[in-house]
Image (cartoon, rainbow, N blue to C red; front, side, top):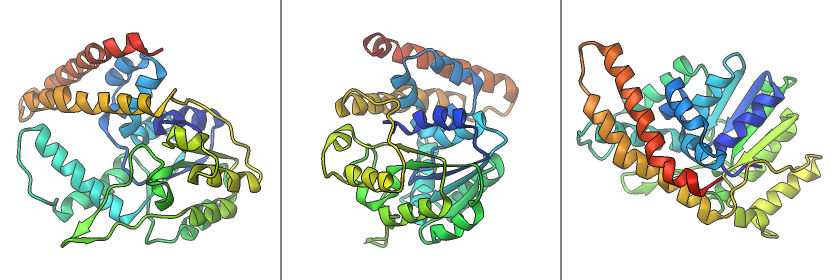
Amino acid sequence: MNSFHSSSINYIFEYSPDTVVSLDSHLDTFFFGRTNKLLNAIEKMPSKIRDAILRPSTHALMRRIMPDIEIFLAIPWSSIWSNSVGKYKHALKAVGLEGGNSAPKDAVEFQKKFIKEILKMELCISPPTNLKVLADNVKARNLVIDIDVDYMTEFQDECYTSAPRLEIEGTEVTKLSSINKVIKFIRLTKPELITVSEVKLDSLRKTNSVTDRFLKRLGAIRYKVEYGNLVSSDNEAYSLIKAHEDFVENKLNKIVRKYFGHDENMLKWVEEEEDEIAKALREYFEPLTKKIK
């Protein structure tokens, strides 16, 4: 059990699996997980701050740290659409452009292609695809199942960032997975290790919460719960998450906008942009670093 999804990566890496299946309602592919300069800028920060910064980069970082393993990403259809729309709008905003109310279908296809061809992950759109289809592909492997609990409907009030909602022509079409389906998937695949993250600390401590009942069901099929990197309180978690969001809004977007549109000396300005972002990261989080150990 870890508070932040990014904390799970170290435990997965130490286990040295052949295959990882990550169940999530978000595409954690932000670029902080894909560049040495930015990772080095974050590395010496306290683990809670570092993991809060890397939360949106978890899947990108997972591939970077474990380049040779097979990774399957299971994400609901409504989530991949909403995530693609969100990333499209964020990219436009970062460079000072206005976007419409929805992203074109090309944005969704781009995200699918990025996951498959750049991150080299197998994508399972589930739901609607039954997880049993995925289970048939990963049985009898040295397997880890990585669970961000916002993948499941029942956890939406007990996770730090709920699944993105999707409306089409005013109708709610969000459809997530469920605890029953995830437990069935675990029974079918029999992973040696399961990482669980993004559960609110209050829910983790509360008897008969959704979290409590889920962990008891895991215990019933002989999994032992161990605790990894946990925040000291939910207030601390939310303050760390907000600090990252504020950095992106107030610092990162301005830097990206500054370098947008450079057609000449591309390698030179990409390097300069990374240097500036790394410097901004260190300076922005330094006051928080002094408060949190």
